[in-house]
Length: 145
Image 1: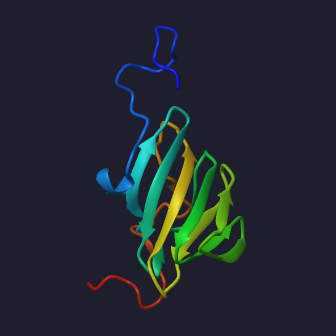
Image 2 (image 1 turned 60 degrees about the vertical axis):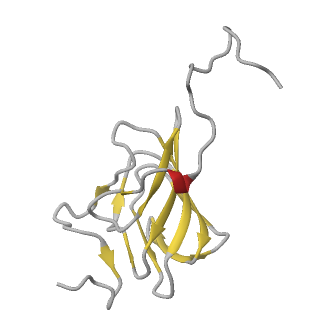
């Protein structure tokens, strides 16, 4: 085990260990139901994300690569026109600038580990429909008005 020295690249007070449940949760954007916690590294974000059943993101894209690893439930993912159900243990790869939408199937909430590149725009994506007002909902899962 090494100790920090003046030659160490680590900044004083830098944090190395985290517990997602101790971090503040937030909603990612207005066009998704994704809510969770994120740790920002120098080059990547890692987040623990929840999508309530029957809901998810509007079709969108972002100029950074993303991976989602499903820990609980099943995602219905459409990436570049290819749709697939992604159950627990499955991984979704979203290349940079690729149109995609991801929703939790109606059976249960989904929890996944998200990994994205750090960019000036944070973790947000750009909706394909500029008039999108809110998240995507499967039929019967729209919020009560």
